[in-house]
Amino acid sequence: MTAKRIYHSVKLERDRCVGCTTCLKKCPMECIRVRNGKARILYELCIDCGVCIQNCPHHAKVAQTDPINSIYRFKHRIALPAPTLYAQFRNLTSVDTVLNALLGLGFSDVFEVARAADIVSATVREMLKTQKVRPLISSACPAVVTLIRLRFPELLPHVADVLSPKELAGRMAKEEYSKAHGVPIEEIGAFFITPCPAKMASIHSDRGSYVDGVIAIQDIYGLLSAQMKQPISEEIKRKRHATWQGVNWANYGGEGAALDNNNVLSVDGIHNVIYVLEEIENGRLNDLDFFEGSSCVGGCVGGPLVFENAFVAKNSLRKLTEHMKEDEKTHPLPPVEPRDDIHLRAPLEPLPGIKLSDNIAEAIAKMERIEALTKTFKGLDCGSCGSPTCRALAEDIVQGRANELDCVFKLKEKVEQLARQMVDLTNL
Ligand code: SF4
Ligand code: SF4
Image (cartoon, rainbow, N blue to C red; front, side, top):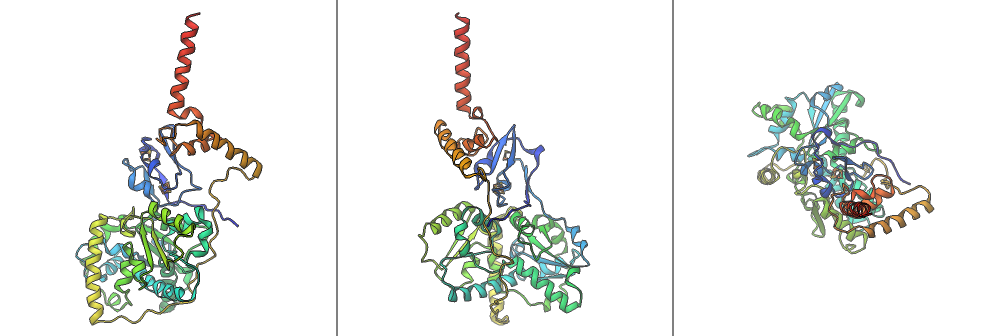
């Protein structure tokens, strides 16, 4: 069974696009085309990784997220800060400053996503003791999960059947707030503060979400900074806090390290993730216990919607977690228990991508045409035609999205042929 997606966060600002083809060559899904001087996304293949946002020199690729004033759709509003938010601030010694500043932006409460990450880590540690599937694959990065649904559907049984920290935080935040304040869940809105567009796409996916909105870190960084000097409220001091390991999930490798298992592979950057998933698909990593793949280079600190330079953020996070580690020695946090009621909202189904045809005979005929056409191109994958590779151009032609003369070499041949014919005509 396959499912359909209806929403994508990554969009093109058409007026800013100059058709330079930079994004076309960087997109890991080969789903960008440039036609008539403008980029276009084939959304059936897009995983909202944001690589095109990070690479467009003209800022023509953008992420659609929610504005801060959208929180007032709800009577009660809970901020769900990604651990990456803490890494945006240099010399932070406690997360309380950030949590407190969020209250100053109009949120009624805050719930650390890192706290949910602690529970996910404890739960996955248990799963590794009881489940036979190897390797188990992290369900935390939504771009990676969508990639698996599109390109590696046979690996879906490997994806850990556990909510991502974002989703678990949304669910727990509402449950705890509702219980503490005696208000109905429907009146509570949970807003994730995100480093990436994939999280935005994931809350609007076919699978539903416990999160009601997604606000980009870069959109609220300035507002938050202005609130950082406020005295910390007693309410924030009393909160149950995440461990340093939960906060460390912002870094690539942080999720794997929290499993206390040395047979874990952590990989960052979507191209590297694709390579490792191919290895898993080919059965070459069956001896691995767990695979943590982060679409962004460096992990979530390298997301396209952060404010701080990823290297500086990584360093700030290191310093913060060292402080937290010391603090936890003198003020130990209560133990984090695994949970058996935090399964994915629904089983993960494959996504169809782009089909050549619903009719098998027609699809085979098209495939043969694509193979034959591909052989007629130079094989340079230069991208000048507006398709990322020669094969992609062949597919675009067969699917009616391009024509042969989009290839500069074919165009040159055609022009030379016409010139020869003109010379022949004038010699008659
Ligand atoms: S990188 Fe892509 S979106 Fe940006 S200007 Fe070039 S073609 Fe347009
Ligand atoms: S978000 Fe990622 S998959 Fe989608 S068009 Fe951009 S680079 Fe390609």
